[in-house]
Image 1 (cartoon, rainbow, N blue to C red):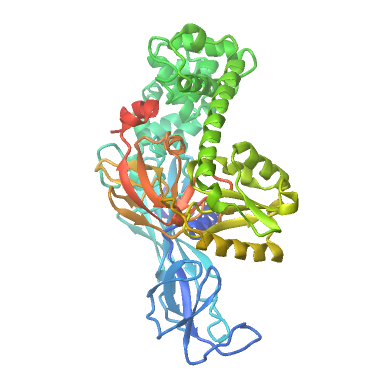
Image 2: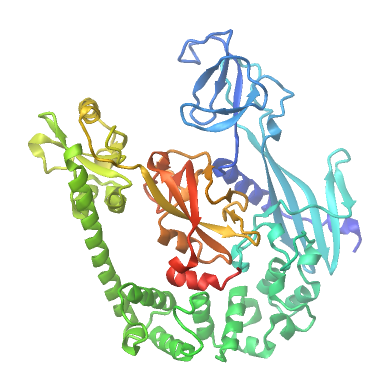
Length: 620
């Protein structure tokens, strides 16, 4: 097949659409994305502008809150700017300069893998925002919604064991053959993280162990392994051999490629039905000398990574026999996860999991339900005690009445949950926040009907000055004028009363990150943001508590951080100190986000229990 035959292969538009969709999300949520503030002079036209405009001055417009801000002098093109209203960061560009470099200030890089009969094509895209369609001659506005421009810039073909590289020549309007292409910055949008132990989608990370340079597709994958798997109908495994070449043997013989006897594998499942997770499960079963039955493969897939909490070489046969017996009771889907959770519950309750009657209960489902209930009772008892402590410390400093309305503080988890149910909003989920001292929940009631929910208030636990986070009525309804008037009185009283209570606004949270071979702590989300012990890290943060998975430094409880990073090959848990005034607590998320925090330390594996034991024997 000659070069032009490769280029003439017809691909559908799936790649372009997928890249466009991913880029749209990236531009909306990436904390590193720097927005565009257009500046320029305006005319005083009341039809379009609510405020009086000085036609001799320059204004900038925020792309997020749409606020106009007068500039002391004409800004420089590309000058950094932060909106004083919503704190969005960005760069200033002249709205009416058609030669502005506004399109070059941020680019995303994506790759898409196209699988063919005898090979793979890696298609590389550069994605930018195009502001050229803005109405430069309109002197009543400085706003523009950009177009997302997706340009395919290079292709890397691996076909029948050979490699070809091409770049798109914009002047000639055709593909040009080149010796190599730099693909390390591109993110594969159709890459399946479950295939790779380190869950990285960056090409630079999908390389052979110990090599720091970026390889071509032919260097990353084995054409012999790919062709062998394809010819024996292991279609999913053939794709996986491109993503994770180190998992497979570099051979034409199928048993050496699988690293298992082919006949044993085929006797268990049909080749076209086997994915990488199942193949790895078969290999682990083989190590322990267990049969490659479908039930055993299913169990091992679900138990993968959960030893030694669930099994070890001494008890694996008895454990698998026990779990197969439990599966016969009908609990076929969740039995492995339930067993892992049950044993974790037993350890948290101080039970001896080496005792046979505890380790292998007759009915796992009932035993798991019982341990979960016992833990919940313990957790609620502890939470009530902590909420009562908050009440004892702060109620006298927060409760108030003007003769018509009053502010009361709840003293138990039950009161907060009842408030949420009666008001049909989510304050019932705030018990833990109040118990931790992250927030203080207050009830605004009519004095004549003190026991009936009216409005719910969340304030920061700063006793010197009132800081109201939100005030919500029934079904999150907004405040009525009478409530606003009362809150003005409450604020005046709160800020004038004496408070001898020292209440620090600083709290400690945790973040799961990746720790590379050089000891650097890097965000798993973008593989770029670096955290350094003893240093303060800052980022743009979306302040709306109703939004989740948006920009900001995401932090959480220790347990959440451990769970979040549990499947990574090289996780580390960082302890981060934040000022609660910098924190947003989303209404429907376990994670919090902050705009700044100080990295205190890496939490030692010795402090992380079973999680630490498992990851101590990981990639480090």
